Length: 391
Image 1 (cartoon, rainbow, N blue to C red):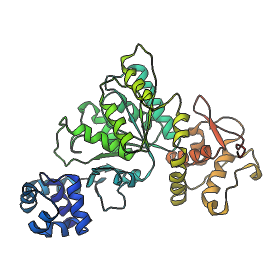
Image 2 (image 1 turned 60 degrees about the horizontal axis):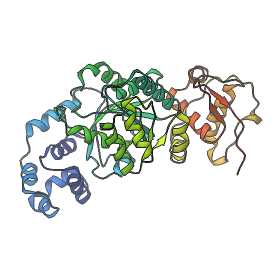
Image 3 (image 1 turned 60 degrees about the vertical axis):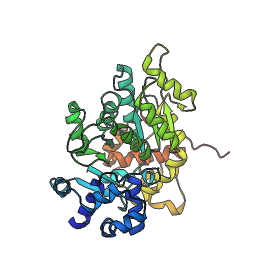
Image 4 (image 1 turned 180 degrees about the vertical axis):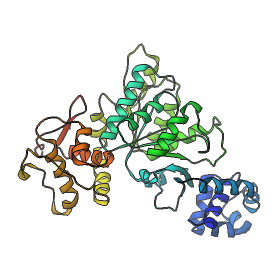
């Protein structure tokens, strides 16, 4: 995107009183930001914009637009992913009030991968933090991107769990990306920017206003196939994320806890309301199998990993043999099958043997598990299993 187009988008985003639906109405009507701005007051009023919004569009704060452009151009890895950009995630397009654009730092290609939201209490228990980190690591091992809100407690533990296994994680922020909130997560935010993705719908300079965080929560839900609530009190922002996920047609998962733990009561409430009770990562993968299978098949076909050495204790006849139309990704899946051998093996060991990126191996393992070829034991190791009989 050239600077003129980028400036036009930033102009729209900076207009006071121009809500995301109104901004998208302009884009839908005129095709792009520059043409929408050129429509003038008559065109804007015809689409229902208020006088305040029209005034803001007619006379933007050029200083702020220039500052936003300077920030975007100020360092590598900074992006503005607009609603018309092919990289804008399709699932987010489908929600009510989808943002007109996303400010990003890091690997924007993560937006196209299947995501699971992991959220919970800021004042989490030690067990809750362990659960968040462990589930996040295991979910990354199945090829999912862990998406959370960079908050203290469960959110931070989820991001760290993903990073600890070389997995993918997205932090959706309630501020502009020129600042980190909470400040004590500065190092974590920098690690995510380097190895994952920071996302915000707020322009640079936006402080951590209370009203920003429910908006952030709707993005976490909108980006994700489902949301896992690890720990939450009965009055918790995490329950807002769960409610938004349900309203958006996403799956809601909750980890139960002790009846004596006040931070388990929100999860118990969700379970009573129909959330899926989760005891292991398999509960999540099984529930999402239908939507994951297509997404991962597309990802494997579009970007199959390069194979490396694959020590084998199995013959080619023992490996999975999918349909001819799936031949290219099938060769990758067969390489994994052969490398696994006859005993449970860690994902790290498979990465070492195959010399594949961890995220691509995770996607392929999830595909094998969904198809019934492999299973995961209680220690997180993968093993071969017989293909289930047709029913």
